[in-house]
Length: 376
Image 1 (spheres, rainbow, N blue to C red):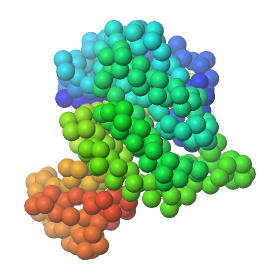
Image 2 (image 1 turned 60 degrees about the vertical axis):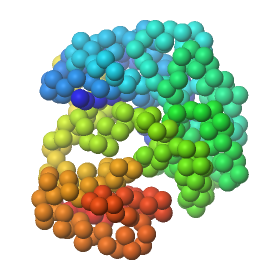
Image 3 (image 1 turned 45 degrees about the horizontal axis):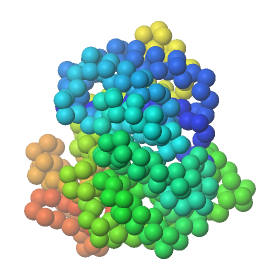
Image 4 (image 1 turned 135 degrees about the vertical axis):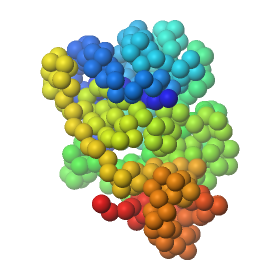
């Protein structure tokens, strides 16, 4: 089984914090749609006849394409790759694109999971982030989506926003829990170089982002979600038992996936490749039948490091027995030696051959993983 990621690179407006590849212009929207269909033909051998278990429409703003266009992309994927009858098919949507007629049309497609970019239930946060919806709309679209039968919902929330104090952040989480939404993705606000947020902070127009505030919010996030019965199954993701995002979980379990669209990444256990992050070169490559992409073959050390990094992020943890079976006894011995210091600090814990991050260790996940890497 494999996954398909489809990147829709268009937005009505750019959020101040966003550094994903997207454009506010709609000039090439229809041309890119046609190119996505053509790219599936060009990439038909990539997954080596593995049937699709998940499809994920991300962006950008996939909800800018009509439900009929989304269904056409799904139909093409079924024709080229084959889709499991119980596949998870997720569409990211912005609240301002969601209305009754759109949901009615989407329900007639094979999309069975919505991921809604709420980001906050507070008006001041949404203004700081330059979101195009308001707090009232955020609540409205969640209830409306359910009215049309979309019970498998996920929303995004952002923490560490200047002006979002601890009490207000807890309120955001309690609103989420009261709505009984099955899945939450929660991310710390980060200032990426070259974004509007970065520029505004440097010019003194916006309050700077505080890493200490984000750390406090992360602790509260883990605490409140546990109190409400959600499992912290990946650093940024919480779910009711059994409602994990199957597509993203496949990334952390290192299953194969194909990414189509500008800037989309693909992985097949042996290599990674990524499409050009520009609309015109992407379209020109598709037109010529020669996809514009870069590729990296993975060394054994890189495969080892990727397993360490991805597995440690999850509640299932890193399996030392699997490391020995896949990479050899020497690799296991090396990593066991490196674990001692992190265990003594209370950042890692062991359960048989399984190694997991503690809640305090989750603050340092990337650093701990890097400390366990093997150099080429």
